Length: 503
Image 1 (cartoon, rainbow, N blue to C red):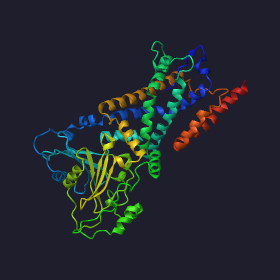
Image 2 (image 1 turned 120 degrees about the horizontal axis):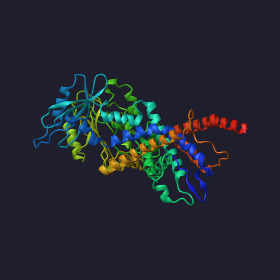
Image 3 (image 1 turned 90 degrees about the vertical axis):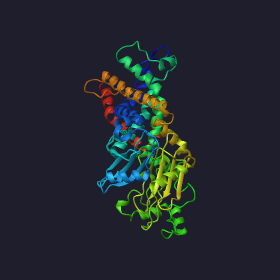
Image 4 (image 1 turned 60 degrees about the vertical axis):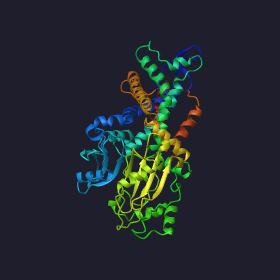
């Protein structure tokens, strides 16, 4: 959000306002760094908002079937067909459950090389419609671009930094353009399309920035809890303060399930109590589990399971484990689907399938309405409900994050939410373009074109305090903030000193 030099009788030019150039300078640095990332975030975020509409258009032969009055095949029959269609060493890890009459049935398999592949079937005839790579499908690539630029951890940290610096850009931009003294609010909110050239770009940029500031702030604050560095620390802090969804607070059932008496010897009450009270009990057992059991071994948390997405609040929830006894037969998938339906979860959810003798069925329901979110762990042998985590079990922070996530993804109030998110995202992309155009038109040749320093900059204690607090809340950003400040003083401060000495 760059600025427009405003002329008014009370205060002269905007450039002459005390502290104006200092704010402009920080706004410039923030914008220079954020602009390319903002464009990527805006485009990928807009596409992801419309995932429900886009994916059936991209893969109609795989995702869409003709609705029929004939009864659907059972989940177990469809899973058997899917297994027969996959390579011998492929392991079924996830079942996507949907009752939509026009949607196909999807199962996710892990291949021998570790890659995941979805197989789609006609739920009425059982015909295999085809397969699709989970990692390389369009929306997954789009999502990974949005979160980490397809660069792994470095990309994730860059995107987190860009989001944090967007806060600086928003704050300085609003402060630069907000009406003062004789300037009217109307001038700040309505673009002056009668001007030409660079002043027009500046005016449109500034006015759009005021309109989009609140939406941009909401996007940043609702997206940061999902970031790889700060988001994890924030979740741990919320959990420690009992404001998130602390492990072990959802009922008194043990974290370790028990086989039916006929199938094997039940785990002792002492063992169950130890596992429930001390999550490291299960974690210790995890180290001795073979690598082939990585999907459901003890000590894992919900985020480790092969699920497309899970509610933020349960990401750190420990996954229960069944008693390791190969003499018992696991319950069929259809039984688990029927059990979930009896608990009120009927469609639009995923089940992480047990892939070892210690695994459990993990039902993850992540609907548009956060209050309906549900995570259920079911013992694969007895069908006992080990944990049933609902929205009411969340702490205050987790409840707020759940609502923020639904709004951020354009899901909470349907198509209107999608359109609003798209308008804000594309508006921010346009802001990045207009800012770049203004900089290019003003930038001298062979120069960065940063706004010059003020000769006698005011203390601006409020702004400095705000930046220090921002750096403390977001340590990664604080480090880069300090680096920019030191670099600015070292490079441009010396140039200013030489200029003053020459005079």
